[in-house]
Image (cartoon, rainbow, N blue to C red; front, side, top):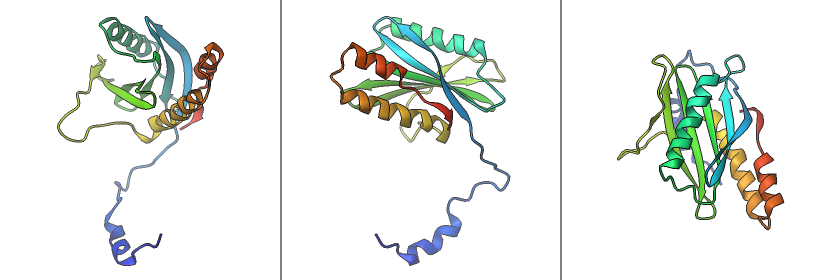
Length: 172
C-alpha cells in the first residue's frame, strides 16, 4: 500500500502528546482466580513496578464482582477474566466475559485512590467511552489468544484447566 505523501505532510500536527509526558512499562501478573457461583475469573494485577495493587483494593474488587454475580449477572460460559489496574490517581477494574462464542463483553469500574473508592461502574454513554489503555491491552491481547486457543480444543475438563492456567506475566 502506497502512502499518499500529500496526506502525510499533515502528520506534524497529529499525535502530539504533552512534552513532559514520559511513557513507561508496567507489569501485569495473574493472582489467585476468583471463583463465583457459575463461573471463574482469571484475576490480574497491572501496576507500576514499585506500586503494587493494595490488598484492600483487591478485596473490595472481589466483593464487588461476587455481589454483581449473585445479583444475576449473565456470565455466559463462565470462563472470564478480570484485572485491576492500579494507576496514578485511579484504579480500574475491568471484567471480560466471553459471549456468543468469540465476543468479549466488558465492564469497567473506576476507583478514586485519593477518595478511597468505592469502585463505580462507568456507564456507557451516547458517545465514545473508555475501553482500555495500552497496559491493560497487554492482558486483553493475551486473553484474546488464550480464548482463541481454547476454542480450538474439544473444551474438555483438561482444556478448561489449561485455559485457566494460560495467563500473562511480565511487562505490558
